[in-house]
Length: 307
Image: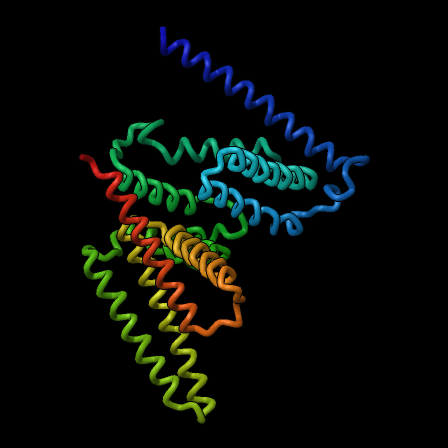
């Protein structure tokens, strides 16, 4: 009886969602129609692309801030952009929102045979490997202008437009699913240390020939190359620790910004301004702020420990 009530409640909820979504689609179509909004009527896929990327980042920001109301609002803004792109495509008879929904629904069913079929994938790792296997099989039979290349390289679908950290971790995660991965965490740490040493050597070479422009330029490019290798290795270390490198760097940046704001406030309390204070004084203030943060963190940890 309880299951029946739950199923009925879900059905009612889905029906309400369908009505709300249909209304959104109708409003977007009206905005684009003759007599609609001049701004909306001028938009193209290309003109909306920066806004789409911006809204995706704002969703991420809302998640990180744990602001439920803002998260809900930003999801709506992102959904609006998706519907708008589908509306533009339908106006040129390419596809419509129904096609988008049909494709993603069928993909979810097809790539979850452990739920909707007879596969016995029992953990996340098995599910991800299964997903990649199904995805590769789909690409071999995918119609379109690039069909002849559908059976190309494994990393061909790695998006060039991804932010660098995200793209690096995505590449590493994908090859790990086909067993191209370090087996021991210590080996990854050693690789980071190796890349640090190689970067130090490249920097020393760069500074060795300040008067030789061509050699200096070559050495500079070597520094850039080794810096990239170090960043790539650091991302791999984050992945092996089951961390998201982008999130980890965001956290470090947030911490830096918060501490620098405190530094600025401290200087203002002394009647001083940024730019008028030497590095030694700022370093002293910074170390004080850092120690206070570490003490607070230690205190928070001790309060959460069981008696």
